[in-house]
Length: 321
Ligand SMILES: [Zn+2]
Image 1 (cartoon, helix red, strand yellow):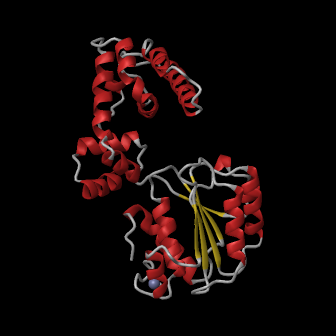
Image 2: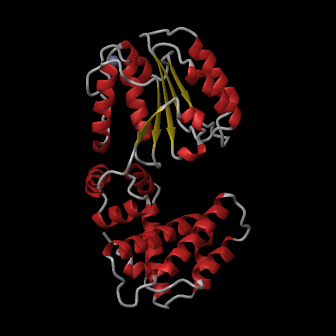
Image 3: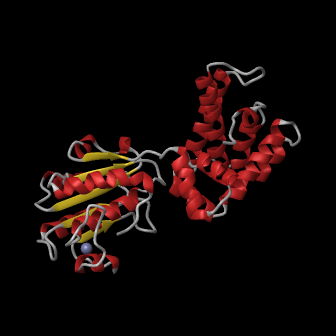
């Protein structure tokens, strides 16, 4: 069987029991931030449902159905994703999925559709999908992954069961990452902070060499807060990685806010909460601008954030776990 990370195993056993008892919903939205394992889970469940001799822990891995899936050629498995050169799933992709689902199953009797970015659809595509969700046909499972529920119409949501994915406890995430990557504890803590506790995202960041970059951000921001480097020089240095920097700065501020609020007091000389909330808002706006590619000058955007940057964010954020 495919091994799922430890934080997904309880949900997996639950779905497996539902399937055995004929209680698995015909349409499931797997909801959660990136990097928690939604794709791995969807894959695992699709294999289980299509397998001819499933076990409680998952597909057998050796039956004809499992072998066809492993070879990416199962005729009753329909993956749908955003094409590599596009940003959205098209209505044509959904229409072709529907016409496939209308045919009878070729193999074991079950058909599984797996849509990997449900939030990346326009209204026409959602409307086409809605018809299938209303009359899915027997022995059909539609798996959908989404990072944000707010971008999915209520008509779609109301016809699906939600399966929510949350970050695992920090210790679980750290142990798993340590085992998978062998990285040192300090890197792991830094990566998990930057990915908001999503272990698979942290592993991707590590593989992409972003760990070193995060360590540099931290050192440079400390230098800024200590007055050892000018905000203008730092903005010039960071302009090629504005999106990563703004994301990381937001996390530092959120952590500082959380820490001050949970500890219920402000350390002497700490940045006042209203100032932190204003800063958090400013960073959110900067992220929006960057996502919309609306800011032609990342350097001046960074300058506007770094010139008034308060001291003691990194120092007081307790960002070393
Ligand atoms: Zn099998």
